[in-house]
Image (cartoon, rainbow, N blue to C red):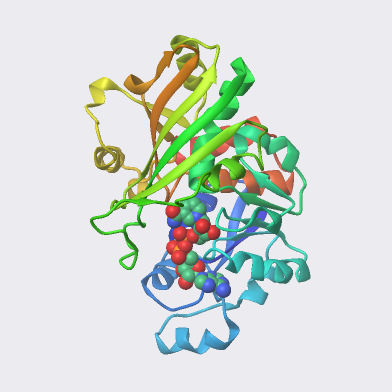
Length: 332
Ligand code: NAD
């Protein structure tokens, strides 16, 4: 049983904690929060030992009537692996604390890649990360790109990749984010950071561009890949990938809002879409170039990857076994 702590219990952290709790071979020994809000209250109600992420703010929890089990240092004493799901940049500040406690660490995609020994994606490089002291689960967009590009490269070989990323302005609960009634080339320079990020895991010739739009539900990628594979071969390869799901013509789903609705109707927790959602009708090959559209649920696609990263660091399963177990427990 691997003892897992989650430091930072927000959008990603609470989903990862719930996913860890579903596994038979790992358990949540604690979650750490900075402030005693509704998420802190729910963590306790869900049965997770709650720790104060900032020692000096521990009293605020008692004042709010929320019982804590101690501070973050005490949580780390109980953990073998910590999942850092703090805001971008905070993970790097926490790295030395994890070293001091001799606990293996999983960072998120908001951190620079040098925060950890390796960047991680279950499909692309699980084996390289087995037994590592730390990994960084690449961002939601990079995860979405790797899940398609790695199997295509493995089965057919690929040439130049061009990807346009239409990115949500903020997560649904991020009331302070934007844009509002606007479209931002983001960044306005080329490439966006996603192409270089893909290359921290996989050797591929890729250029990415990004736009931010006034939407909160999902990102959409327009992907263009040079390949000798036919449309049928591409589809066969992607059908073999458990974390790629086709949006079928008969689903009648033509937007990200409908994908979210479909996930809610299927009973997915929080309406999460853990897989890449590829519109089957968009998959086209013309003159040796593949085109496809995929929707990426930013809040949840990295969650199964974090679970696999725990097993890779702990060395408790090989990739196929871990991916199969994670998928079965989540319902992928
Ligand atoms: P979030 O703001 O929703 O949650 C972060 C949580 O960490 C909050 O509860 C915050 O109060 C807490 N926190 C702040 N400082 C802390 C500290 N010093 N110690 C412990 N907790 C602290 O952020 P998020 O969206 O969950 O993002 C977390 C990481 O995951 C970032 O690196 C982000 O780039 C990455 N990520 C986010 C998304 C997404 O779309 N939300 C997708 C993939 C990866």
